[in-house]
Length: 114
Image (cartoon, rainbow, N blue to C red):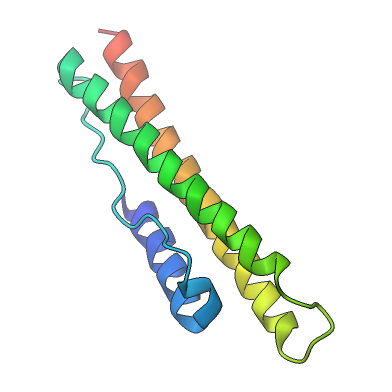
């Protein structure tokens, strides 16, 4: 959870540093993953659905970043910094999605091991 918060903070800082990136809406509300050792099947299914919805929002964000980045002319002044900011926002979003997926998979494995 702490790792997710630091990644989320990094995404928000990157977004606020570049106006064009701010046009893309990063999913800031990550799903709450229950403890697989004690969660009910319904709770785990709800978490799975929340993770899938989060992944869809994250994909929309990444596609938006791609569109915004494609609109830039690399040789134009200042665009090198913008391209780097797009790359950082993309990397942060992917890292956050991996963190959420790993947390869910850990909970699912704990649930299945019961």
